[in-house]
Every structure is written in structure tokens, then in C-alpha cells.
Image (cartoon, rainbow, N blue to C red; front, side):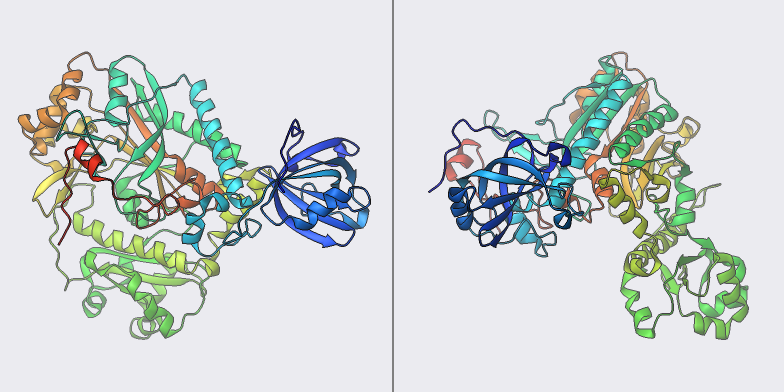
Length: 622
């Protein structure tokens, strides 16, 4: 028989009680985490979002409560009335924040029972993720998940407060909007009152936040929900949250200062100190040094080892001397067997026209001076795993060989990107050996323990600047915007927009940390004539531009101020600070890798009547 709560009110959260509360009368409410029956004494660990408190049911003191304690099971919902008392010295549990006290119960109410759950929230390691997502309401009770979302709240609050202090106004933008190309597929919403027409869910608030600058709000921000219909992975979901902002009359440095302030505040809320200012690196430099535009600075970068080889060496090794020749070093991996080396081959992307040499025994035998020089240039010890990545002259790909002064050609970027991707994959594979990632775990542990952590040891932010304005699309044979088409080009490159688009640099920037892209932004185009030039360079006709962006082009004619901004992925920030392997650990109700919500069973079919109201007919594949 279940009890009614009546007029009983909770006085404390379970995890808040300490030795200073000894002697106080309390009312706790929560779930039974564990139950231990010692005959005349029954111990219940009662859990709420704050933590766990131990309740003692003494058969002599509360026979009714003891009888109920014999019946309850884990995940029953209960209320316990009693007095806080200090535990005996030999019964203190130093692993629990409430381990010095327990509650001597005088009354126990059973507020609800439970079905047998497929797993216990008292268990920290649940292997089957599909089961966790199916029963997400049980999974979210686990202490780890409760910590993650408390952390998310603290970070979000700190970011809001930082931006508010810096003069930003939080303004919401529409969820139902117009379909505009922004790099991914739109989620479309059919209109009932306008048959055959559709709204789109926003991939970002991009155009609206620019219009807010035209509207004179000067500094806008939003913790914005965004939607992109794209393939999922550990750091990507169909719906996600951005810290979105825009400023009038900024330069890059102003945007950087704002972001560094709110990001440092968010990390401080998690107990981590980030040193300011964040380092900066151009796109070309990032590609040359790390083979990626989101470098993980916890590992050594790429080393140019061209000087270690003679032309005869390169010819014998079948290496293209016109392309980069780099070494990547993974520290402390130790000696690898032949099978272990062969198992690395699938991690390498040979489609980029690159090849790798990792058998240093053979290299040292045939080219001892070159092998020794490579290890010297890479700063490698005997325990370090070193691989050479270079261009493959036998593998020709359709790519531009055009070389711009001070810039990388597309073929050079392909080789460097292959090396950078290989570096990342090998680092993940041998993480337990080289240990470069383990410091993050220490930082997360200390952050949860409320200790300040020097972020320079665990979290490495870096600004990447001067990206190419355009990318050549082989399928269409056209130059495409590397970012959205409202990104401003560098003023010095404006003359090359139509005649030489490959040489044009974008006035945009990314913020990366530990191998993840946290955010991307730019100084925007605020003049209609420049915007039309960009469309012209992208082979977008006036008619097409009017159809896709007409309202925005109109707005540009009404005194648009220079403006710029950025959007950072809040989910990714929390994922990093929580030490989580996936966004699914920091989003309350995520989708699986197959884009399914297992808990609510979505997506699903809808009724014929609903489709009829929307003037839609479903055509299934035969």
C-alpha cells in the first residue's frame, strides 16, 4: 500500500547534509539507491540530484518504518523523517560527502514503487548505449549524468553572465524560417495554410542576427537551438545548441576578446582556469604544422623532414619531391610488432594522394643516415613511434596544382591533411601508451571535486585565421564558399574575387580546442555591392540571389553597419569539460547514430488525415 505525502514538506536535499546538521530534524525525499537489511536495522541510501544520504530504520524505534523498509526496493520513491546524527568513527564513509552522518528515521513513507529497471542507476558503467537511450529517464538518474547536466547549467549561466556584463542583449530568433543554403540539409516543415510551401528549421540564426545588427541592437547573443539534417557522429547531433553572438563595428580582435572572456568564465565555472590570450595561427600554418584546421596541441605537430633525404633516396622510395614530406611522432608508444604496424594501415587515408613509411628498421637498413636524421628532426626518443607521410607520384588525383605566393596548393593540403588525420587516429589508438590525453581526465576529476585546474595543462584553445574564401567543387566544376556566402573577404584580396578566387582569403576565424572545432565566425559583408560581387564569383545569378536571399539583400540597402560574430557549440564545450566521449552524454534526450530517438520512438509515420491536411502524399521506395 503506497502512502500519500499529505502536508509533509522536504526540508533538505540528501547530498547537502553534513556534520554541522547533527541533531536537526529533517525530511528527505528521493529514490532508494541501495538497501541493506541487517535484521533489526535496515539501511537505505536515499538519492536525489544533490547526492546520497544514509537512512537508518531501527525496528525498535520505528517498527512501521522498518516493516516498510523490508518491502522497498531500489528506485522506489520514499520520504524519510528523522534526526541527523553523527556516525560512529569506524562507520564513517570518506568516499561520500555525507559520509560523516546518517538519519535516524522515525517515519518512512513509500510514495511510489517501480518496475524492475533494465539497469540500476547506482551502477556507473552501463555498456549498452541503446538500452540507456531507450530508458533515458532511468539513465539520467545516474550520478555521472546528474553531474554532467549540473555542469552544463553552471557553464551556461557563467556564459550568459559574461556576455551580459559585456553589453550583449539576449534576443530570440525564429525557429520556423525560410530555407536558405548554409552547408547542410534543412529540416523542412510543411505549411498547412500554404499548400506546397515549407518552413525550414534554422541551421543557425545567421541571417537574423545580421538583421539585428542592421536594426541597431549593436550586441546580440542567444543560447540558440539549431538543426541540421546531416550524418551523425560522436560530436554531431541533428539538433544542437550554440552560443551565438553578433557585434556591430568590430574587428577580429574585438570578437576574440569577447569569446575569450565568456569561455574563460564558462571553464572557471567547471573549476578550470584558461590562460588568456589564446594563441593564434593561420590556416596555412595550421595545415603545415598539424595537417588540420582544428589542431590538437596536446601532441607534437608534423615535422618537415625533406632535408633528411637526397633526391636519389626519394626516387628509390618513390616519394614525390614536389610535395610535402613530413614526420609525425606519437610519444611513448614503444616497440610495435609487425602485425601492429600492419593494423595501422586501414587508419591511413590513401585517397588523398599520399603514402606513408613506418618500417624504420627497413629504412634504417637501407637509408641509415636518412632514418637517423628523420628521428633527430622530429625530436624522437627510442620509445616514440615515428611515421613519414609524403606525396605518392603514382597516385594522381584531380586537384589544383596552382601555387600562390605564401599559400599552399590543393595537392600540398591533401598530403598534409592525410598526415594530420593519421596523426589523430594513431594518437587515439595509442592513447593509453603515450598518455598525452590522460591529463584531461585528471583535470575533469579535479574540476568535479571543486579544485581549480590550470587549463594550460589539459585544454588547449587556439584561433585559426585567414581561411581560403572558396573551395573548388570537382563535381560541379564551380568555386563554392568555404564558409557561408556572407563572409567578408580580406580587403587586400577583393580585386581577385572573380579573376583568381583560389587566392582570396576570408575574414573569418575558427576556435579549436583539443582537436575539436568549438566555433566558427567571421566579419560579415555589410555592403550590397560587395555581396553581389561574392554571388557573381560563385556563379549565382541576380535572379537566383533574389529568390534565395531577397529579403536580406533588401535589408543591406538600409544603412547596414560593419558587423561580425561567431557561434560556439555549447554541447561540445560541456562534452570537453565533462570528459565525455560523445555529445549524447551532455544532451538530455539525444538521437542515436542512426538519427533515432529510442525513448519516444521517433521518427514515426503519421496518419493519412495529417498528411491530407498538409497536402502531402508519401511516395515509398519500391
